[in-house]
Length: 260
Ligand code: ATP
Ligand code: MG
Image 1 (cartoon, rainbow, N blue to C red):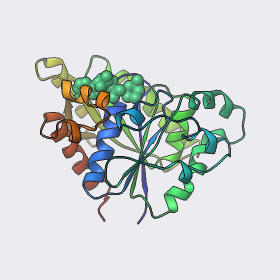
Image 2: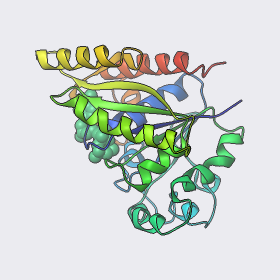
Image 3: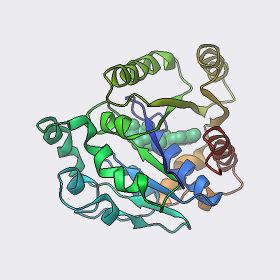
């Protein structure tokens, strides 16, 4: 059983990266796919969204320093087949510390190698901080597929260009030649305005084979769930947000052959 690594990145803040990482990972687990969510953001939003306590020394901070292993950091969640490697504030220091080491872009890749070749997980989903700093760049080097969460808002395409240029650089420099832009998830779609529709159409026009058919609606239930430490499937399983993330998981399973 190979392990497929997805990273959810976008340098822009508040676009739905964490909401997508948490609920996509939960939906994959629900579809019988053993899944690991890695919280790579010092804000630790994904960790608390899963109802997992932040704990000093429980994150990838140590392993990225050569102390301990990623495997030791795997933490169970309340959900079957879903584990997490939590985050903590300390992870922020890595941004500076990694820059002073050799091969600093490939550190995370090395740390995750035992998980990639191990048999424990079929899918790994990495939640990135809102910057293309050391942590996000490391995730792009460690991943097979980049999933971009893109908010349905004015100028969405500008931000997209920036991240796609970084992907190209990593590929042409041979640092992760196989990195694939796996898909674009349109988030916070507002049915009451024309703008959302226009932004989706625009992205579809430019990247027709990348954009997922599933569009995530803007709903207050999705924003409430994390404060209860619950996924949307636990908090309000019949809500439009839950349905949307279920559909997205189906698309991801089909597009990347996760069931084969
Ligand atoms: P950051 O860049 O800070 O890590 P992010 O890209 O991870 O942010 P989220 O934390 O997922 O973004 O979302 C930002 C805010 O918007 C949160 O308060 C979240 O609950 C809310 N939110 C995310 N998706 C939706 C949605 N589809 N409908 C309504 N609110 C949403
Ligand atoms: Mg986030």
